[in-house]
Image (cartoon, rainbow, N blue to C red):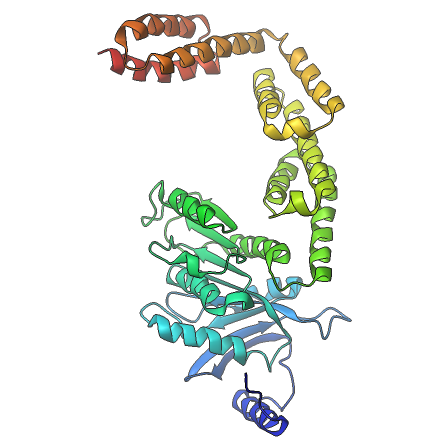
Length: 409
C-alpha cells in the first residue's frame, strides 16, 4: 500500500477539517454531531460519548446504524453511548433503492471518514438496522471483513443473502416481530439452521405481539450488548491481553450468578452458555457456570408452591444433560427433594400416569399404521384419561388419541 508523504497527509487532514468545520488535528467533542459531509456528497451523524476521567486516548468501539428510509435517529442513543463508551454513527444516505455498489462505497468511506475526527477502534465496529437497514447491516460486515465485529439485523430474514461471504468471526443477532407478515413460523428456523451449518455464531429473538416495525430501543441496545460480548472473544485481531480481559469479564459474570434470583439468574446463565469457546478456553469457569445454573434451577423449583409443578421442574432438571456434570452431593439433594414430593398424592398420580403414557407412546410408535394393534392401545389410553383426569399425562393422552383414532378409521 502506498503511504502519503507527511506533508501530503497533513494537507489531507487540514482539508478534511475545514470541510467539517474543525481546526486541524482537533477531535470532535462529546455530543450529537449532525450532517458531517464525506465521500461522494454524502453525510453522516455521529454521537460521541462523554469519556470517563482518565479514559482519554482509549480507542472507542463504533456502532454504525442504517435505516430503510435513510437518516437513522442516532440522537436517541446518546445516553447509551455515554454509558457504554461507544461511538454511534448514522449513515444518512443509505436507504432502500440505493444500488448495493454505492452502499458498499458509502460504508467504506464512512469508516475512513470518522478516523481523523474521533478515537475509533480499528476493528471493534458493529452495524445495525431495521428492514432494509438490516440488510445494510449484514452487508457492511461483508464489505469490511476483519475490520468488522458484529451485525444486528432487525425485521429482515435475508432470504437469498450470500452469507458465506461474511467473515465467520462476525456474530449476527436477528430481532423481529412475531406478527411481521414477512416471517412465517418456520422462516427463522431455516435461517438459524443454515447459518449454524455454515459455522456462524448467531442469536435469534422474536418479539411477541409486534409486527413489521422498528423494535423498542432497549431491545436493540440489549442485542448490541450481546454482540459486543461475543466479539470480545471471537474476533481474530484481538491481542492475547484483550482476549484475557474479555474471558476474565465472563468469569466475573459467572461468579455473580450466585447472587441473582432464580429467574434472572437462569436467563443470564443461558446466555453465558452461548459464549463461543467457553468450555475449551476456561474449563474451570464452565464447570462453575454449570454449578451455578444447577443451583439456580433447583432454588427456583423449590420455591414453587404447587407440588406437581415443582416436581415437574425438578424432573426436567434431573433429565438435563448438564446435570450429569454437577457433583454427587447436588445430585443427591435433587433426588431427595423429588422423593419427598412424590409422597404427595397429586404428584404420585402424575408420576404414575406419566409412566403408563410413556409405555403407550412407545407402543404407538412401534405399531404405527397397524389398526389391529392400535385399537387395544386406544382403549388403554382412554382408561388412563378416565383414571387420571387431572394429570398432565391425561391431557397429552387426549392429544395422542386424536392421531391414533385417525389411523384406525
